[in-house]
Image 1 (cartoon, rainbow, N blue to C red):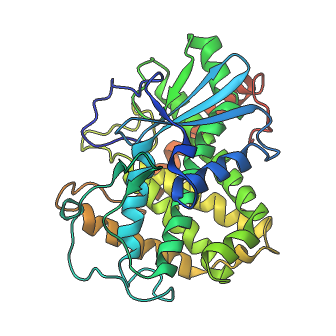
Image 2: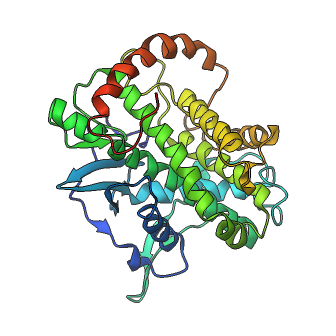
Length: 357
């Protein structure tokens, strides 16, 4: 996860200043995220001493690392800001979730560069705050935007947590002496296919953890953010995932699946959605957010189209395309899955959860 202009060998500084979420005071998105981080630490899947930091960094990025017996994830504050900024723009459009509140203020063609980017402000030595200059005026749509952002940030945090509980970091430390794993910008020479499977495994763990986390607070979310409408929950999850994956870098024309650290981003998205839809049908039938249908994919298409409209002028490649998924099937089945069976044996030595077969 990074900005398009970021160089591959530039990483987040682990020792950069970090933000204390209490500095931002009550009643704002970051205080809500603090509550979510505390909630994550009480989930059974955690099984480790897990800490989250938000660093003063302007790239869409995160890093997982360990210090002693403790596991850390450092997320750039820009990740929160960019995610919320884009979600606010989306919820300003009446095409997305038209059943929520009043229509948004943005009509017609609009581009990301037309809007002032968010910034951190502090007035009269009071609490810090992130100033967002756009978004829907309707309070119901603002609440939904906040929940979508929380779900998106939870997926990012759970992905990094997946590197810890899946034994990825300890495996890399024993194998290569690596002590941290960046979402983007790693410089160690791990076999690309092995790297792809570590990231795919972290995505799978994040998907399962996200649903588990939401299910434990489902009544709170429905009452506090969705005005009692539980049927909106799966749509909020879909918008969150679409936006998170959209904000990740799009591979350039020279992308080579055999030498990349990630499988194509659109394929990662498709796999995550498949995992979530499958779990909704099998494990969460009694939950309010189990009401899945073709309407979920309609929400994805609308969301992706609006994001594409935002960024087309700036980055014509920045688009999730699902049509190419079948072309990956042979590579995934014939190369990645056999590798995973071997890699899984090594990871099980360090994992604190049951890994997928």
